[in-house]
Amino acid sequence: MSDRKKVSLPMLFDKMTKGTPLTMITCYDYPMAYLVEQAGIDIVLVGDSLGMTMLGFDSTLPVTMDDMIRHAAAVRRGAPNPWLIGDMPYMSYQASDESAVLNAGRFMAQASCDGIKLEGGQEVCSRVRAIVAAGIPVMGHLGLTPQSVSSLGGFRLQGKSGKQAKKIVDDAQALEDAGCMAILLELVPEQVCALITERTKVPIISLGSGPRAHGQLLIFHDMFGLYPRFTPKMAKQFADAGKAIADGLKQYVEEVTTKVFPEPERYFGMKDEEYAELRRLVEQG
Ligand code: KIV
Image (tube, rainbow, N blue to C red):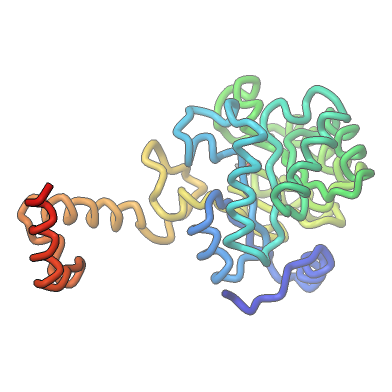
């Protein structure tokens, strides 16, 4: 158990005001959440990226609300103190304000989240207003928004031209006006991130959008060498857990094959007289 204080929204705003960078990470299951809790991370996102990192899909689109709730609840059990955000999966909010509120509410009631995140700018402001009116904090998400990867033309930098970047700046303002408590900027030029950070009154979190935000986010599996398909340029690998596990597995196969494992201290026997009794009973039939 950790002796951390539960992170609250005023604590996040206090850090932002004092210029202390906010730390944010994705997390998807109980054992990793336990480690994240010990590290003292401020904000944990149970991202729909779990469709790729945990479930092996090619995109986030097949992820369902039930998938998200199962993982978010497990993360909360491992990490009781960070500010926990449930990521609204594809088609959980696009259809109507009403479905958006009901699905956002599931994250709060069934997974003990502190808020939700959804993707998009001016086109989702009515959803943001409806969810906020239901008393649920909302984080916005602009730039590379993976649920729209098809219309964005792939996983690539967004807002490269002045005109495209102006749309992102306007979207950030619209999300703030609609009541978002924070905005995530994924893969936009660092100048665009800095400009938005200067202009908004809510925390701006950067994922691959440079240092001039109020906080940083990384995807857990990219940080620890646990996603076999690729590691994006924006991700720094802080340790190679994937290699450590792969080495351990090779050694396990070797030790079982050569009968080194299990060693005598890892299994149990019974008293000789009990074994003799067992043999007698077996022979009797
Ligand atoms: O699903 C997720 O992890 C996300 C991040 C890519 C920001 O939305």
